[in-house]
Amino acid sequence: MLDQRTIEIIKSTVPVLQVHGTTITTTFYGMLFENHPELLNIFNHANQRQGKQQTALSNAVLAAAVNIDQLSNILPVVKQIAEKHRALGVLPEHYPIVGETLLAAIQQVLGDAATPEIIDAWGEAYGVIADAFISVEVEKYREAAEASGGWAGFRNFVVNQKVKESEFITSFYLSPQDGGAISSYLPGQYITLRVKPEGEKYTHIRHYSLSTAPGQPYYRITVKREDEADNKPAGVVSTYLHKSVDVGTVLEVSAPAGEFTLDQSIDIPVVLISGGVGLTPLVSMLETLASEQPERKVTYIHAAINGKLHALKGLVEDLVQSQSQLTTYVCYESPNEGDTYDKPGYIDLPWLQKIADPNADFYFCGPTPFMKAIYKALLEWKVPEERIHFEFFGPAGSLTE
Ligand code: HEM
Image 1 (cartoon, helix red, strand yellow):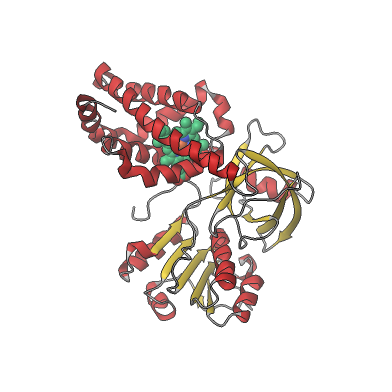
Image 2 (cartoon, helix red, strand yellow):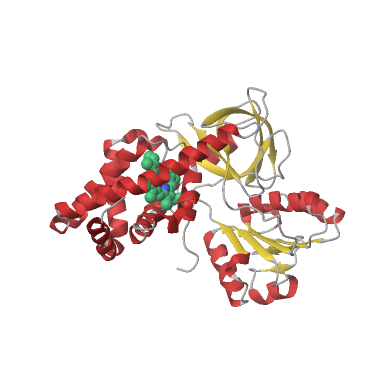
């Protein structure tokens, strides 16, 4: 328990953190990888380059500082981050390294303004915050290991099918190498792969949503090959999966995780909206709804560039044909001749108002500009926040900035 004085110091540093938050975390990451390069085996280098991870960490630290005397207020956020940490293999022994580096970064950025009293207070506060994360994570590892067919950490899986779904999107079917059972998952959850492509110095970890309904003896992920574009380097892991991984390749996988899941406790209508490869968790939800809640009204809207880049089209059409309460719409940004679609251009509010039910539960996933547009449209339509569910690719961000 922190004393009153420490709490006051922490709270009084919040405005400073707001100004310097991202500089501190950027400095922090520089120091962390300089002194502990082995951690580059865990962190996503691309997210570092784009600054996404710095912002996510800085937001989390700020939220903790604001709530330092009542950390239970941020327990839902802690649980969400802990879920990702568990999937990545973050362990209690990593926390002191992060703590020492964070204090050093605060000291460096704030200079003399970071008095010994402030640094001590932050040292204590970090200890409290780290303990909160560690205890939630210990519980998450336990749950993952004790689930039927479950395991903690990484387990070897063999690729036993590789199926091209569109020009840049391919599915991989993964079964455990030990021949054992696999843990079930909730539609919308992801698994995490750890790979070391030839020539790479470090392992690379990525999360991929499961793209089928649960209940199969395998996990299926559906991955877009991220080629080099607009000064953005090619995706190390997606390129490796597409070009070097084939039937028979063994991949390390950690157990399913994630909080973006379908609420099946209710039977109000559902609207699923996906952009590009963001369709993966939504197709898992769609398949689950078709088999487990066949009376529930479902509208599935997918946005793609054109028909050539539209993955899992046949699968969705087959589902819709067999279930009268499922309706699907397709929106193509730049349709090719011969493409069949319902709307050219982008999804917008007037169109949503024609095809979707405003009293539905809304789920969406896709590239950030797409997500921002959908979120804005739903808020304009006065859909209550509690019926709006979404997931980002990579670290959580903001849809309103
Ligand atoms: C991800 C916060 C400790 C490794 C994250 C995210 C946040 C966060 C907010 C982003 C979650 C998202 O993707 O939405 C924190 C806080 C910590 C802490 C507040 C301390 C109290 C650690 C430690 C490690 C670690 C000790 C291990 C060395 C990671 C990694 C990611 C992550 C690898 C994924 C980010 C990426 O690679 O893009 N953390 N974290 N974190 N954290 Fe932590």
